[in-house]
Amino acid sequence: MTIDDVTAVAETAIFTIIKCAAPLLLVSLCVGLIVSIFQTVTSIQEQTLTFIPKILAIFLALILMGHWIMNNMVEYMTGLWMDFSAYLS
Image: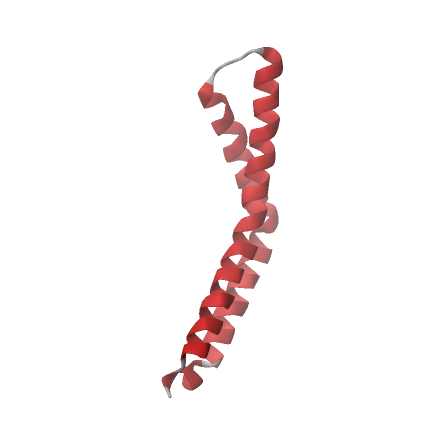
């Protein structure tokens, strides 16, 4: 296994991680921004107010996008295991 092989596997792994985590992070970011704007407009300074909407939004996003995220992870692992013999030499 050469340095190029290791770099390719690491690059694919990092890209897969980013691709799988990005939708959930964007949902969390948007919900946090909306709650923050709501807090600013209403002058509510409760710091724990953002947790419940974020948790519910992430849970809903996982329900909606969980199948897609799992398919991406399975594709990566299948590709990794299919090329496993090439990594041994």
